[in-house]
Amino acid sequence: MHDATLLDLFSQDIGHATRLLELIDLEYQALGERDLERLQSFLADKQPLLAQLSQHGSQRSQLLGSLQLSVDQAGLEQLAQRSPLGAELLARGDELNKLLERCQAANLRNGRLIRSSQVATGSMLSILRGGETPSLYDSRGSAARIGGQRPLSQA
Image (cartoon, rainbow, N blue to C red; front, side, top):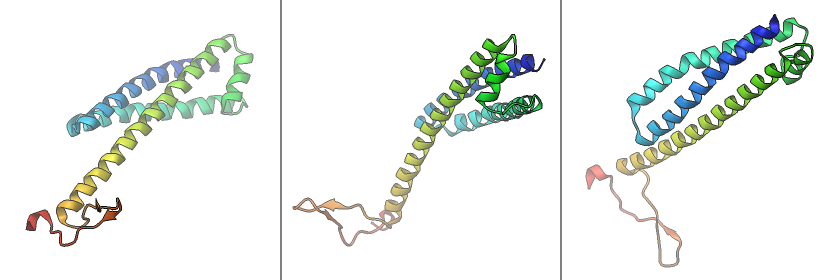
């Protein structure tokens, strides 16, 4: 009975993780286009998926724990050895793990794009405010600071 429940949770989460990966990829496109409305929409769509994945992860851990098994891959393998659904349990668990790894990698990619945009925006704001002046190269190829720069608003 626990194995069928676990298999059902895996199947549901594979659907959730697939949709999450789609949203993360769409989020990447919206980040590149700086489309804040779409980004907010994707965030709203991602929240329930993440909540479901977390809840089902806890349920899977409780199921394995109630069977006196470790709540990791080794515990799943032990359950699979004594279950008629064992091969399918392992296959679905592996599929879910791979999807979640892809989601994590895509999310890290999006985070790098966000950080890069923040740095570029901060640099532009600093120049506009007159704080940091851009450095240029002198005749020897060394960075040279140009003195007497004023903020754009005072130019």
